[in-house]
Image 1 (cartoon, rainbow, N blue to C red):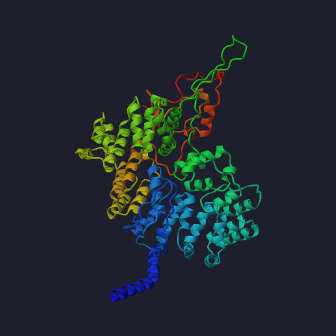
Image 2 (cartoon, rainbow, N blue to C red):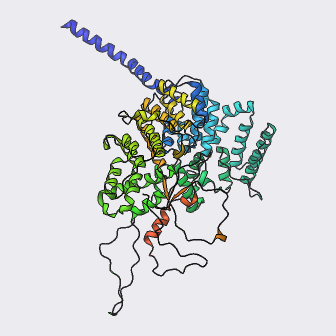
Image 3 (cartoon, helix red, strand yellow):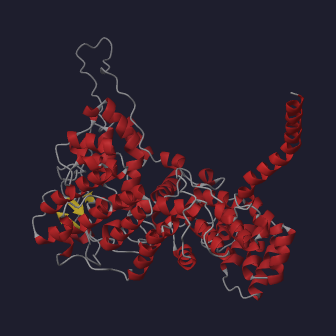
Length: 628
């Protein structure tokens, strides 16, 4: 017993003596990954996006990855790719093979893609950021873009960084110093830095003009620029006039910077802010809270019984006429969705209405006009809500289009046992058969069962390879074989960058979908295939306007690319050209929430306005024709 007691006491003493050491070792093991994670482990996802797995960069080829980071841009017109590419760039993970320059390229891409708020948080999550002056320079530009002037200029004034850059005395660093001096009200020092930058080879005169505009009123202010954080900060400080083109083809990162600028909402009227907000939401850089500002408000509840007021004592008086009822909110949603001319716009309108539409279907489906059912079912497909799409399809007097049924089958595999085969068999002529086989190529790539239908792929007349993408698609296939999720996501974005979904190369889309599925990004692959198929079916209702005399018509310079379907009065976009910048026509902008609220609450006049002279009688057809 004594020996057992001694052994127990000795063991207890040893454990007590060793516990601090073991605890310190445990803390070292737990904190080592956080201390040694490096820039690749830094992560800061934009609001509303989920982080990808930490192994997303494993197996990546350093050279290919460097080129992908360098060339990827924000002109991503597939709504699903806007999310996927940003998920990859802003997600952290274990470092791939490569040097520190490759890691810096990722942060440059994040700063280029936006949103600026997420890019700033990404730099803040980098451990020992000050040890890398080159990366700090990119962080300064991100801070300028986010409106964090004190943070950006604090980095500029830090002794070590300023000394290191002064030894090189590059024009870019001198421009940064001039920007901080100007924003701090030190005009003389700012002008001196501008002169030093010119002496080092800087030839752009915009900086000097912007510095002068910040210092005080000038007779010829420079145009507003947002190609860098410095330029954006100077333009906002000098209160330069924003170009109207920002609302149609503005850079997404610049738009996110403007919308998050400290006093932007108070400096500009709502009619200028809302188009910028809609463009930012369509390009994937608006936060969920900002997107919510674009929602069409629900109308106030209508009382069960409504009686008109009769003047007291006048029994012969007729009841006062009531104002005509407002159109159902579901019809307003369908109109806003159908008049949007791009895949980005339709995806946005679907996101804005889907929650309210789901509640309306559950509580009061009789308030949805039958002619709007098919359009709203398509909106549910864009939003990825299979249950809602099926509920609307059942109630719709018109069936879904073949491509819409194919997209529904991809999202819900049990909806149809042979959807691809039925899609091919429904084609009535050789041209429709070739289009159906192209659609089948996308569906099979997304994982739909073939059931022996692959023989259709060897038929002649299928679309050929476009845009010289052979090398890029080969790199994409090789990246998928290595299992590199991040590299595949970037290469898919690069392969389809700047292409409208309705005119993208079918084979490139199919290879991209298969590559995403191979690396485990199955949900993203199905979303990409859905975007492509629904965009091919994009139909825009024709706006009916009063006829104008031929003399008042402006001369046409080129034929329209839209074809008109005379029985239905719909304009179908079947051949959207590839353009370097995305642009949404102003005429197709959906009604703003404020205008819808005013029209729903304000009483309508019962007296018809006189018809204008020199104009034909207005047509009897409604202003919106639902797609068939």
